[in-house]
Image 1 (cartoon, one colour):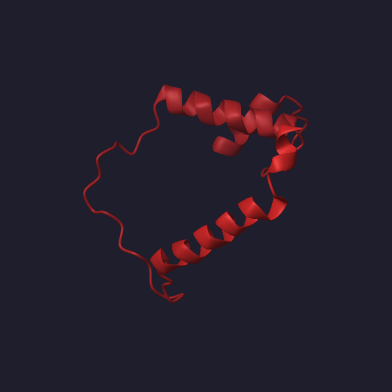
Image 2 (cartoon, rainbow, N blue to C red):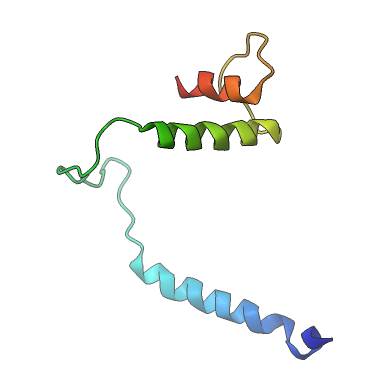
Length: 88
């Protein structure tokens, strides 16, 4: 009932305008060129146990929800074990 007052096209026009405005900030590089990475790194090249836990948990959840598996399975059925195998 409160939603009857809002027109359907009103939000769509806002999205189209945002897309047009956002396209001005896009820079397309030729396929042979790569953007230079920042040479001075702030972080370490090692994954902490907290980062590892989050990555494994997220990927295990994805696998449990029938996401495609990126490694060959050798009888593994546990999503966490499959995620660990993928991370190696």
